[in-house]
Amino acid sequence: MSPTGPALICYDGSPSARRALTAAQKVVGDGPAVLLHVWSAPPEVLADSFSTRGGGAPTAALEAEALERAGAVTAEGVRLAKEAGLTVEVREARSTQAVWQTILEVADELDASLLVVGTHGVTAAADALLGSVSHGLLHHSERPVLVVPAGAQASS
Image (cartoon, rainbow, N blue to C red; front, side):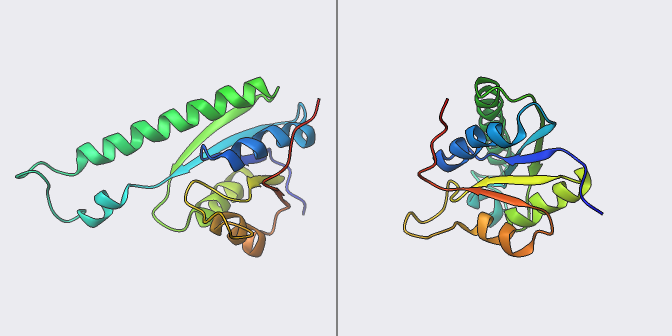
């Protein structure tokens, strides 16, 4: 059975994700779409998950800062989607595994008809052909995946 849900547009604030979001408008048009921002705790939180910082201060402050940054990235994505003419629902997901795995879990939950992603996220090496997220999605998704190349330009 073919997926019938919305297009799932992955957004992490990177230039590649911005291009993917803009390109998604040409494919999605007025159809249903969900903007997904997957975030994870900063390395300091992961390293200190069983300890405390600053003489007993828990890492909750770092976690709160990560959550605040995630909210800002999501808000930026919503603004850019609106500017591109997309109407999106918004989802945020905290990942404790590979980001592509979290994306696939959300895609399954929504029965997403299409996954839209850029070639590289905020942590990808510039000389790699694909980042780990786009690579993981291409190799593990059973749904169509649109990977928008780095040089893609949205034209009017």
